[in-house]
Structures are given as structure tokens and as C-alpha cells.
Image (cartoon, rainbow, N blue to C red; front, side, top):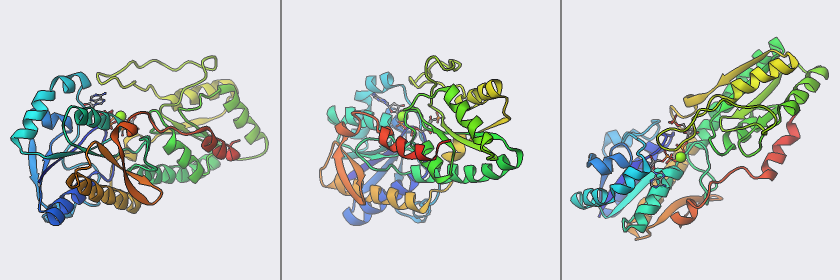
Length: 343
Ligand SMILES: Nc1ncnc2c1ncn2[C@@H]1O[C@H](COP(=O)(O)OP(=O)(O)O)[C@@H](O)[C@H]1O
Ligand SMILES: O=P(O)(O)OC[C@H]1O[C@](O)(COP(=O)(O)O)[C@@H](O)[C@@H]1O
Ligand SMILES: [Mg+2]
């Protein structure tokens, strides 16, 4: 068999570990050939690819962040208009099954291609952990470790200056990184996209904490968080060419509002792409490797239109259609758990 593989959307620690496992399993277990398409779906539109072999170079990418195949975004309309080109590229390269590794966008495209007759097995990646039907995506654990270490460090400087520290973490639609980093880092408040915040309530918590004699206030804010409509207004950033909302810095704007309303000294740290770069944690290396092995197995078993997923400790297959049906956001009861430590 000939297996195609690509990485799409934002990069994420563990992508290379999946590629390595797909190549190893396809080659050694099935005697198959693997072709990597460059820069996400763009590589299929432009027939840019490289033959991947389980040589020393590929063996050594296990712990390397990013993706050796490159990644890119392509306007969905252009992708849809290019269906015939994509099929031609797959034919020209003799590809039997495609393994797209990506987030909800890449997997939506994979589902659409599967429905258009392109056999595929998806692998869920994203530091945001917002893909439905899987307990975890790889990359999340690494981002969480980085955010937690940052919060640990901010505690001591915040205490020394009796400051309010706002830490903005990634999380476009889902607050998983914020929720877990807030719990792991002992934050005094966590604000997530799923729960619009009230600035007055935030100020009340900050004030009462300092009135009790506590020395600092750490608040984790997901980048996609938004205030209640009457509470404050965020600057508008519009949308990019792929339909993604442009963020304007919710933590920094909330910090300015806290300073204005209660006169506390506030500092804001935006972690940004530090959360996405560098070497994956051991957990993510294992999860990404297991996903890669199972995706290669599924591709060879004719299990197409599926996505590999983590169910407890088992790697299973779910329908791509179900996985892209909705985003996995933080449910109310999980936020309520974290609220035990708010204030
Ligand atoms: N509804 C869609 N139909 C077809 N292709 C899509 C769709 N949504 C996203 N894509 C493709 O998948 C790519 C990656 O999606 P994006 O949301 O940027 O990243 P991620 O895969 O990390 O969620 C997009 O640039 C686009 O080419
Ligand atoms: O700066 P970029 O690459 O456009 O992407 C930023 C976005 O990508 C993420 O890091 C991950 O999202 P995806 O995994 O869906 O690509 C988001 O948390 C963030 O909003
Ligand atoms: Mg996306």
C-alpha cells in the first residue's frame, strides 16, 4: 500500500512523533510506502511531497516539536474548489489512504474528502484539546506543562509586589488549557471562553482577597474569553482570511479595567506560541506514538472515514463525522470544580 500523510492547522508538540509512528508501522508491519505531503492541504493542491522512510533522521524526530512536513492554512473555499486537483495528486502518487493529522479544521476537511471518495484516517492534534470523541489530543499536555511552569514562577514575583497577575493562555473556543493550568498552578481565578466574565465580580474577588491579607492574586485567562455584554467592551479585531476571529488581548484589556476600577497594580503575561513550541512531554510522545500506530493499522485494515481517539487508556476508532460534529468545550461541572479555589 501507499500511505499519504500531512499535518494541517496550527503546529503542536507531538506531530513528528505521529509521523514517525505512521512511517515505522506502515513500513515494518505492512511493507508499505509512506509519502508526506508538504504544508498541509496545500501540498496536495500543489503536488509537493517527500518520500518518508524509517531511517535515522525519521527515527530521531520523536522528541522534536513542530512538524518536519510543515503546515499551512488554505481557505476552505479554495480547498473545496480544488477537489479534482487533490484527487489527481493522490492518483499520480498512487496513494491508497491519506492520514491527515490536524485540528477541527483539518479533520473537517478530511471528513469532507472522505465523503467525496478519498479514503482517510484522521489523527486529532491540538494544544486546545477541543476535539470531540477523544478524551485528550496530543499537544495539550505539553502546553499545560509550559503554562503551569509559568504560573508557578509568577506566584513568587506577584507575592513580592502584592500584585494582581493575569496570565493569558491559548484556547480559542475552549478553556481546557486555562482550566487545567489554573488548577495545577493554584490560580485564584480562571476565566474561560465558555463562561462570560463579569468585571465587577472579578474586582470584588481581587479586593476581598487582598482585604483578607493575602499577598497576591493570580488569574488565568483563556485568549478566547469574553466579558458579559454589560460588563465591559473588548476591542474588535475582525476576522482573518480563514474565518478565524482575530483576538485583541483580553487579559491586557481586563487588567486595565481592574486597575481603573479598584486601583490595584496589575501585570499581564501573554504566553502565546511558547505554549506550542519545543519538545513534547513524555505523555504527549506516548499518546502521539500510539495514535500514529493505530492510524496506520486502521489505514491498512480499510477502516476509512474514521479518527483515532483516546477512550480512557485505550486508543479506539470513532467516525470522523462524529468527531467534527461539534467542539469539545469545558462543561459546567468541570468549571464548578475549579471554582472551589476561586477568590
Ligand atoms: N469546513 C471546511 N471545509 C473544508 N476545509 C476546511 C474546513 N475547515 C477547515 N478546512 C481546512 O483545514 C485547514 C486547517 O484548519 P484550521 O482550523 O486552520 O486548523 P486546525 O486543523 O488546527 O483546526 C484550513 O486551512 C482549511 O484548509
Ligand atoms: O497563531 P496561529 O498559528 O494562527 O494560531 C493560533 C491558534 O492556534 C491554537 O494554538 C491551536 O488551535 P488549532 O490546534 O485548532 O490550530 C489556538 O490556541 C490559537 O488560537
Ligand atoms: Mg482550528
